[in-house]
Amino acid sequence: ATWKEVAGLPSGVNPIADRSNPAKFYALDMAGHRMYLSTDGGATFTNSYEVTGLPATGGGGGRGGRGGSRLVAVGGKEGDLWIVGQALCHSIDGGRTFKETPNHPPIGQLSFGKAPPGKDYPAIFVAAGGGAAAAGLYRSDDEGATWVRINDAEHQWGNRFECIAGDPRIYGRVYVGTNGRGILYGDIAN
Image: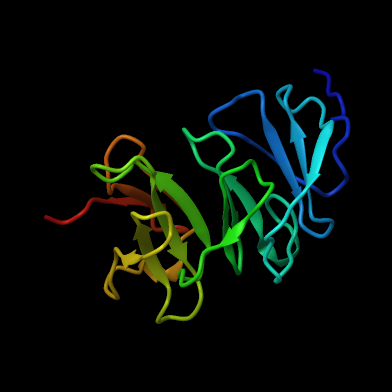
């Protein structure tokens, strides 16, 4: 019925929720190298700090920024953030510092699923765009250090992966939306 403008958030910067602390929201201004922080559920953004380690490729904060870069928060790990775009960067300190993750597939969509057995960091799932050779679905069980392709050339579904979601309860299970071909899911083959 009524709306109130968020205070302290610059125009064009998109906030995301910390998926572990409902009071915290982050908004990244990549052009200005600033992270805006809310500790009152996104009502006001009063704290900001300089960000180091941002990718040189530029991009905007949140979804739909210049260059397609966006900020993603990991569930169950307060302050654990990723920048997804042409580069893939990871922060464990609420976005104060980011470190680029080398050797990743081209990323169209990114999601997190249940951690592998014996580990406490979620599996990372990627729906990769790019050329026909790179397009596919990938999983990392080591915070993006290495990637394994989890589909093959016969299971591309038109190279149209619109969304991806790792299952938070079943390790290795991933759901994929395919732009008109339905929603599919897959498990790790035995």
